[in-house]
Image (tube, rainbow, N blue to C red):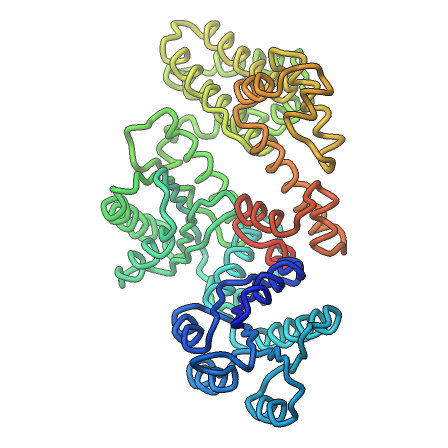
Length: 507
């Protein structure tokens, strides 16, 4: 959003400017105000500002002198003058100082908004003409690299984008390492990039952030053996430097550049899930999760079919597949109890990853309960029972199989009426239940508050509309249930990390 600063010696003018314009809809926000030129000049030296709206006649320093002095500090600042005096001399001097418009009080709202829109367009054009800022480069890099490791971008477009970004990815092998921090840190990416830059011997290493907020390190190298050693060195150094942040580092698999980046990324994500089991570790490597002797055997399991049956909520067929796969593995000569336990854990991790993709929420109970039971199982039959139990738990979660019918009704109602004015009070009246009790029950059974759930649901719907329609942001806000556009912007930034306009432009 573009930042606006207001200067006027009449407080009611300042208050009026706050109220008469929907600033967020214009892509602007008021970042400060002052009642005289001296105070404004002092504040403007410390406050990032794109647009200055100032009166002419003020005590201590008039508006024209303020413009003259601030131009020396911020020559690109856009200025709109408000004045109660229809004086040609003022207008002439203002024009020489490069103002956008000279508006007479009382303000004509239509003319004022037209001026703001024109300024907004100029600022946009100015930004487009400039070199990409560090922030916008990061947004573009994150988007391009994430789409690549998810197999969502064509090779030609990918090459064009990384050339624009100055990235070089042309060596035959890739390895992806994922960094997830359990302690909040806004500068984690900067810390990691500094660590990477400090190790001159490294081959190509590119850092970016995925949509889950995880930091991704992409290693690109000529020799798999040397590449593994270099990545291991960096991982060890990162683990040491970031130990106070409670960081979890998971390494994927070495794959070919041509078609394997998404596999390495998926395997790094999968290895990350095992921290729920091996919580005392700081680093987990995908290739160490299973011995080489059993890798091909695990790969023989039809995981795509298991995913399909889980998503179809087909208990009977999923249970039959579990029976079939364990029976097959049990007949392999030399199979060990440890391998069968690893196989059972593989099922649990895949159940959890599917739930997380669909529900945008963690289901740690699935792994924690299953892990303890698997490790104490004495026979293969017991393992089969445990995996089936976890499969049933996963299906129940997908079905929204909560204990109380009232919460099921509320969830169903949200899905069809999320764009209406929903609150615990209105829902309590609808379903004849006290809103406080309903809120407690909802939080207990859904795992988050009603407000968090409805905001998250609406933002997901807004993301769909931003990508699939040409509606304006304020229209989308209303269509998903936000009547105040400013509040919608705030919630969208909270859940997505970027503004609606930035998200729409990610492509």
